[in-house]
Image (cartoon, rainbow, N blue to C red; front, side):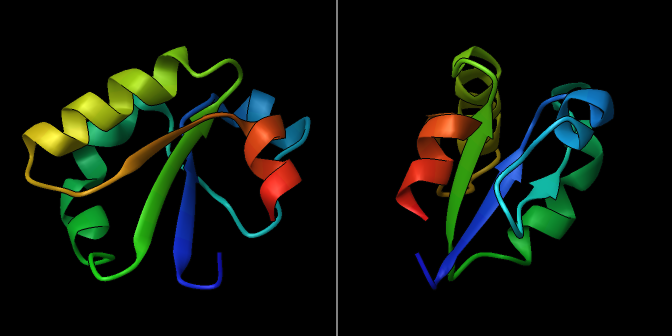
Length: 83
């Protein structure tokens, strides 16, 4: 996962309670404000995660609609186990 960026779409409070080391916190409700920033990350594998995979699924659909290649990693705990 050296060429990947992990974006955690949970709230800042949830993120502070535990997250994948090196992940970026961009809450789902604010994701639309980060589209240009995320587009600048293209070339790396973008993996989205949250608590259960529901919000990251919504985020994945939104970003794909913006032309951004990304993957729903599901729960941050699942993603954490892979890194």
